[in-house]
Structures are given as structure tokens and as C-alpha cells.
Length: 236
Image (tube, rainbow, N blue to C red; front, side, top):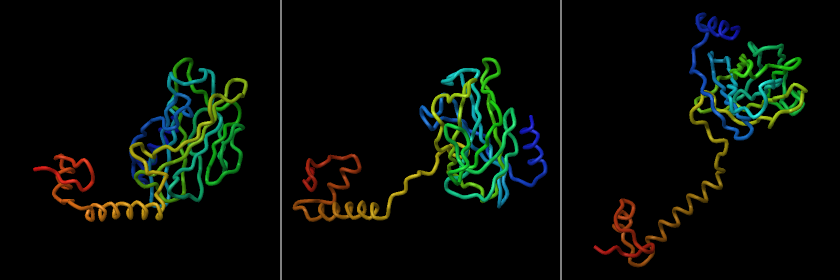
């Protein structure tokens, strides 16, 4: 309820522009522990934005209905940067925000540029009885808002009633707002140059081979007869 009221005040106040609704998915394989995750911009200005991080607990959750979550760390925008973060809303319980990442023992205060929300006590429950919940954290991020296709990186920590770790420590990228994210791997310039030179070499090799004809090359790419060897003539 607090989150809904807060977001409504922001949007009615006109200080921010409203963004897309969350898209929940699992991009971490077994690290998802059977649940779905979303990171999305709720609203923004030129120098700050309100970021929602949601966990949609499902009946496929790999733990027990009595488990809780006691830590959530995030890099708000892997392709960008931020100067500070404030926790505006969170699931049940008392949560504190601190710089740094998350490990199997909870928020550890190291590992920039993470910011970590830590629960005091048992944390937030994942189920109401046997009914799965959707949990939401809302952050105010001071920094340039993400661009289309940017990714956030999240970590989270599930525990059982005895405080023991449950499943894998979640750690993976989430596309901000869903959809297609930017690739985290960018070809090195030397690799691109080698690929380009290889294609050029293939082109000149074709031209130098005896009996090669440009017509046969065009026919093969257009779905016509394909020569059995590079440069072999195609019979009319």
C-alpha cells in the first residue's frame, strides 16, 4: 500500500514522467530459484529516477513456503553510473540501505557500485500461507536515467526459518523494463578488423580463381544453383 501511494503522489505531482510497467522474467537459470524478477523505471527527471525492483514468487519456488528474503543488492544501471541511492519503499519488515554488495551472509558493505537493502530480523515472507507474493523495493537513484536496452544487476538472498541459505545466491543481469537488452560483450577492435580482412580476402580470392563468374555468385545468394566449389561455373 505504501508503494502504491508513493508512486501515485509522484505521478500526480507532475515532477516525473511515467514509464513502462514491469516485465517479470527469469534470466538467471537455476539462480532464479523458480521465481521471476523485474527491474523498471517508475518515473524520472533529467538527473534522477525512481527504480522498482520486483520479485514475483511462484509456485515453482525451490524452497519452502516459510522462507524469507533478507537481502537485495542492485547495480541500478550497468551501462551507466549513479551518485547515491535512497530506499523509498520495501516489503514487510524494517530494511536499511547501505553501499556495497551481497554474499551468503547478507549485505557485506563492499563491491561498488552495488547498493544493498538489508532486512533487520527475518526479512520479508515469500508466501501468505501457500499463496505466493509479489515483493517490491522502490529506490530513488541520483544519476542519469537508464537508456532503452540497459541492464541492471541484482543479487538476492533467501533464508529458511533457521537462518540457513536457501538455494543459490541469485546474481544476474535483468533488462530494465523487459525486452531486448544490450549485449555485455562488445567485439574488440582487433577482432572486428580480423573479421573484416577475412571477408575481403575471400572476395579477392573469388575474383582471382580461374573461371569464376560474378553471375554465378549472384545466383547462389538469390536461391539459384550453387557451385560445388568456389569459383566453379554454373551451367545455364
